[in-house]
Length: 255
Image 1 (spheres, rainbow, N blue to C red):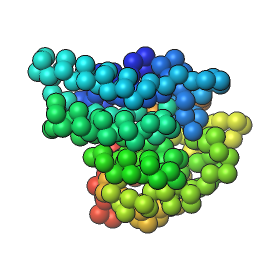
Image 2 (image 1 turned 180 degrees about the vertical axis):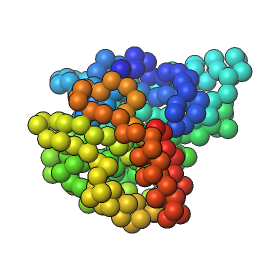
Image 3 (image 1 turned 90 degrees about the vertical axis):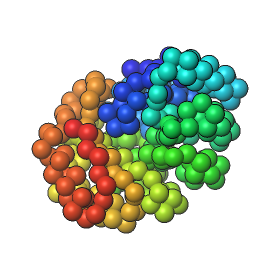
Image 4 (image 1 turned 30 degrees about the horizontal axis):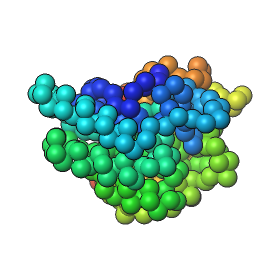
């Protein structure tokens, strides 16, 4: 499932409501620093010179869409950076975010600006500073155990660790939403399940260390590139959510 436009929607998001999507990655392929086994965009495809929209192309596309929605009387709840890969990889991400916030303020000040990110680019100061300008930083951590994180997310940097990600996330002093996809199945000949007692104990501990303002947990909802994956039952997801609620966290469960 790939998005063929820079600006798409509005769509109804399970977790974010009426959302206008932003795709800063190529229109015909995924480009991401992860290659998650559950990604609805499929796996990364080797492209020698991927074509990314320029900052001006983004601005013009967003301006046209916001004018169109304003004339039609359509109210959106969020402008969401997601699309065909990791948005913070775009070389002009910071400039684009500033442009987006400016246009939002002019056309739909009621809408939040949201960035869905896998957290891998948070070693770059300009990315961190850009994310401080948006309303919702939704940052991924699919497992608190290195081996499981690597099986699920398949980072292009094989040396990336959970400790690295935790260090990146700590820069926001809890002012972010932690997002985790729970699943089970098999990949590369190995059984995978990030809902076991061992996995959850490590994950709960990490959540308590990071103290995010919100925790968003969800299950696979569309076809995945690894076909052996299974959806976690709603009962189990609600149990996980209830444990964190008991610790005082705001939890959104999409099951």
